[in-house]
Length: 237
Image (cartoon, rainbow, N blue to C red):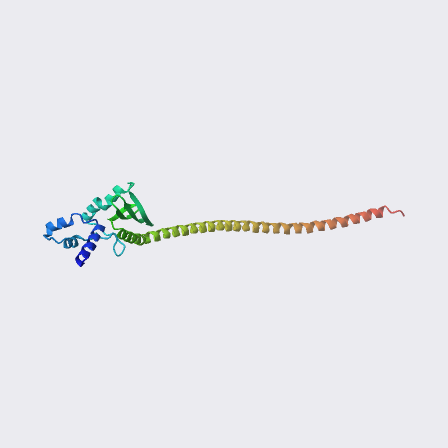
């Protein structure tokens, strides 16, 4: 294969990946006045913009690109998605993003799809198996990059919710402990008051006991005196 044939082969393969070369030469020959198919293909083979920019931001489609997307590979794959001839070979999920490699056996065509929340975002078709695998791996890497922030947000949301639950549990525990402490303080106040009252009552009772004992001793002395007097008066002389 000479150098020009190699260039033609490479360029045509690239055009197949980005949507095919049907009608390119005929349309470009009419508009550019050239009969060199390689030059025509090179002039027309401007790849579609990648869906993700260098900073991970979605690139806005032009009206023409949006129209092509609506009537191009995405719509074509959507029409085939439920047919028995379309086989899902591989799928990678990262967060809400995914990449799939599908094979349409009727015309030996591979579809490589990039999607978000199961909505097709970009679809590339090719009959080159190696190229399809390469694009699939690239799309799978893109899903990992695109989902980084989403996954991090999911983890942070879970961590925040977990922390909020711990805060709520701690606050509830603190409230119950405070309630217990308030009850303990109230009960301590009651106990202290009862203790003070009991001590006062005990002191009064002790004083009353002392008085009673003194009265008892006085009564016992009186009894003894009376008994002596009685005994003396009854003595036989």
